[in-house]
Image 1 (cartoon, rainbow, N blue to C red):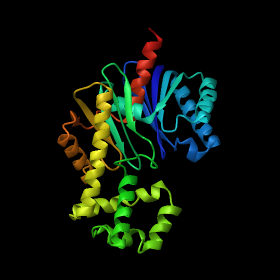
Image 2 (cartoon, rainbow, N blue to C red):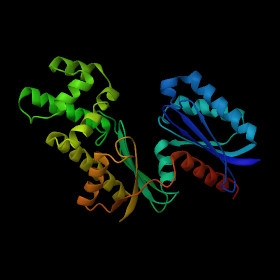
Image 3 (tube, rainbow, N blue to C red):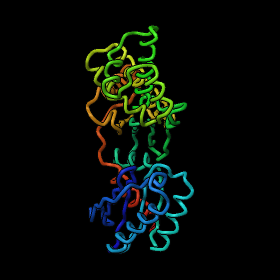
Image 4 (cartoon, rainbow, N blue to C red):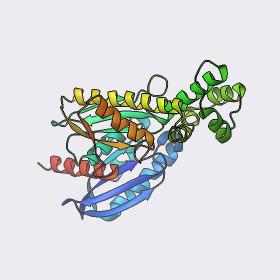
Length: 299
């Protein structure tokens, strides 16, 4: 049997999806984490061998598309070349944003934004061109991310303690939930922790926003506006007047205050961007690309 396959390689799990050449689903299977930086080279190679064996058991894989973060890691490509060439499986490695975008708009033009621990905006034009904004990391970017909300909250709490900022319920919430009761606790938390630690403060902003806290509302609205401007910049790069946008990531893939404020910000700046739920998931986007690749190779 001839077929194509797509992989959504995530930090905690890997989804493998296989389709017939007519686009019918054959199999979906889940494996362990895909991130080579977290699981190490030996575990990554073992994972690819496991996936290759699964594909070989189904028949002949005409093309495999893998979407994952960290594809700039040369060792990832080298190990993938070694394993897949051994099983005679042609493959393409792309960023996870590419397969998310492909699935979200069924291969057509459109935008997508990821707002989780970090943030990035990207889009696909009518000619297939892909543009992006953001994704610069937490030192100089990540506006509209859980990290940014956590950072801005801690800054607001510090100003509250110093008496040079507005009073905020965030101070009591963060103290109760994270044990950050004073200056020393906050400094230790910020400078001995990492990006994920600061991002873990974001749920407190959600609670404070819903309680009507002015400081929390300002933090959410400012970050939503920054993300809206980044999305608008992608639209301009693609020379589009209007586009649908899909949302991904814990801050906006559900009915949250941040998603509500982001949609409102897009309307306020008249960005020409309309929110729409993703048509398909990222794994489907990967196998859709694989089907396109296999057809290109036979024409």
